[in-house]
Length: 233
Image: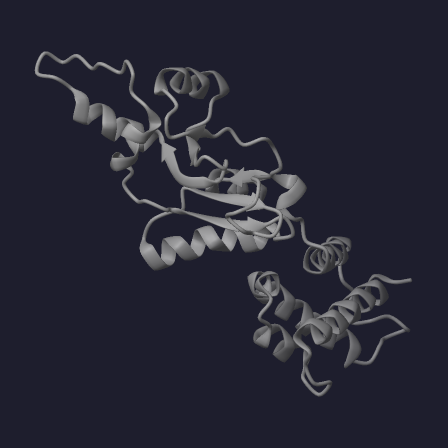
């Protein structure tokens, strides 16, 4: 099988998948299916898909010379369209990619031990949990810095004895600055939540929490920061 045959075969699989997920009419062209798709992953790779559509047309609609296509794709091109097919039809999910035990603290927890844990475990934020163990806020390094600056006495000393998590909450700059997603959310959909927040509110989400169905009333399965997911994407 030539590279052009392999390329067209994978292209056709993508075309069929687009028709299925868009529930589109058969008369729509590949380009129209791509442009009209509500699938965030398809939209993310729109330019590449459209380019591959043009290459497919060059292969299919031009006569062959000595039984060879005048537009024979490189190995890397075939590998890339195969990779896109997998990404679109079976994208990586946030679970198990970001699954781990999330460190959280209750409002009445003292911050002394928390600060030690944060340094030892190298994390910059933690969810505040209510009596049922559900997220009710998020404290990060910025919150702690704001609280510390508000506690400096005239002689420059800061007393943190008997200080609890609840004392930090008033210093949270953007309250509720987090979202929840289900375990079946793709990494691309999760990444778009960060980007949309930046575009719409000119600030980044502090974190995305993962639960079974995306409900805040469920146990935490993991946590995503923009740094973590940017490196993966």
